[in-house]
Image 1 (cartoon, one colour):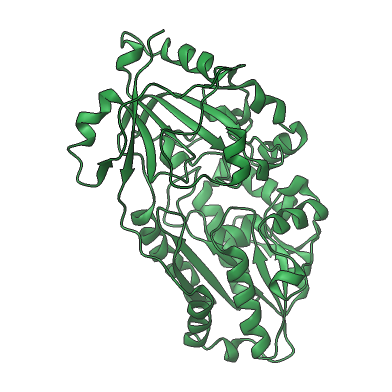
Image 2 (cartoon, helix red, strand yellow; image 1 turned 90 degrees about the vertical axis):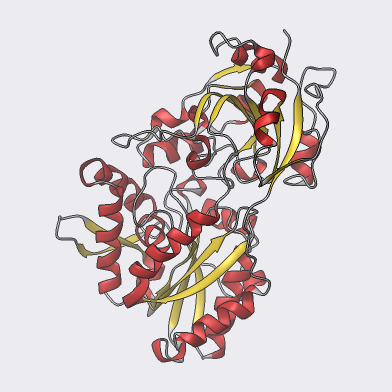
Length: 432
């Protein structure tokens, strides 16, 4: 089959960068007068999640360091619902993946799957909280604020969601995902989160937003009374900075890496234009006819949640899947449809050829194709020759490579992209 030729392009995004995160966090905590909220000797649970948040270990350490300077006793709790196989050991291991240990952040890490019930919302929804967090004098939820992969709202993925889903552990995460069916995502997160805020357990929150290059762009401390409104404002800012594909209509998107460290659904649904969420409408754009995913990140530990968002994958990825971890995550989130195994093939070439045989009357060599490293890596990407003319009309796009055939090796698998500045990691590069 004649395949399209590809060329490397670079996208230019507005990308503010926070150069000294610890200093910024300390300044923010001083701004809200954290020393008047947390008293000397108070125990403080700082949350840490399971997403690939930029500089998360640095942020946690900076927060713990500041709390220690005012005489408090900080510790870290995993706030990741059912992730890590829904075990304390698994959740502790996830944090260690991100560089969060007692030695690196200077505070104990206390992991449990036990929760306490704080009460019930006006809708009768129970409010669960991690037992160690509930036993502390204060809780400081720290998280990145960004667009959610399952719904659109004024509050999506951020500090409020971490308080509800993350600190609710497996029991809370499963219950609230069930409640989403009746009440909707935003309503559950805001009502349960507001109940937790009203208990006085939350000292303040710390919200991080990132630019399109996965760099920390801003850190904001949020007193409990202003947390909900401030998060809403930060979400608008975060969405304005997020990375996107340069074209809205594609025949095929090739994604080199998917995984839990990239997105809760393996791929960011805001990038690929597929949600597959019960009771939520599918986005109108981007409109991508076929998606082919090639590899599962090592950091996912076999959790292939979201693989069902793709149409095609590889045998090597399927062989990496840990069914227990994937099923536990998908059942807790009540989204088994997102983790069905797509058609899979032994080589990348075969998968691409089959995919391009399913796009209608468009000749494969004329297909609108993009290849990306992951939905987090959108600065440099490969586009098919058909898209080049449109690319040259975009002021924020720069063609940086010559038109070339797909770079297959002797086994029919893709070599690294035509040109790249830096791979996700050395491990990832060798796997390609």
